[in-house]
Length: 93
Image (cartoon, rainbow, N blue to C red; front, side):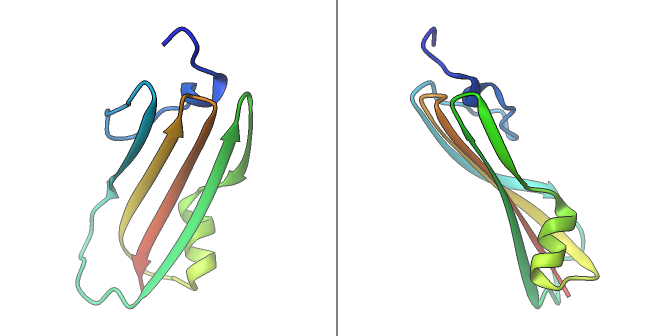
């Protein structure tokens, strides 16, 4: 744990963090899951102490052409706290 880089300091939603490798997914917001015909994703990436990207719900909606959100999930991945990604997945219509 003492060798964890800055990328490992970003919060991982869901509370489970592996010291060497983490790959988790889970809910962010829940709504009516029926009738979700479109999917949009957005992503941010961190390498050592530098992070870039837009993992917002708004960016995912724009990417998927979504105007009505049904539910939102996330995926998080981190390797040794040196490389990490956070992806937002929006389902809707």
